[in-house]
Image (cartoon, rainbow, N blue to C red; front, side, top):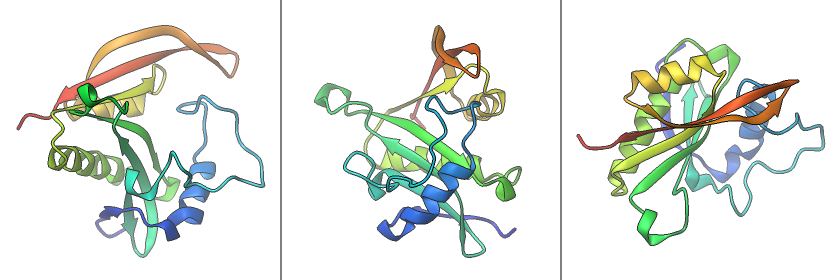
Length: 164
């Protein structure tokens, strides 16, 4: 696979991102049940193309990351939050998630953010390992916050400074 190119999402990416989202669904990261067709559009009033970074390789979408302000409050405008990251199975193990994460950090800095946060399920070891390797630290844990696949799962808040 060639080095992925990171770009902003386009409205025309709706179907490809929807497919990616449904194909990668897993209790490892999802807190909602698996959806069945017909699927809602990927983009809507709360999930706009401008919120997403897309990794593209060999003319197809390899993954995406959603980056947003965590709240609409002016006193929180210095923070960006990752609210979704998915990579196609065929593109895993090739650094796509890391490239998306690093691009999100750069975008957040360019937007004037000085801090980035995310929430990850406690049992999602691959994601937690990636985030830790990029400077995120655990800042809080809500024990047993979710009941998924017959088990209680922690909700882990991670964050990092965006200072250079």
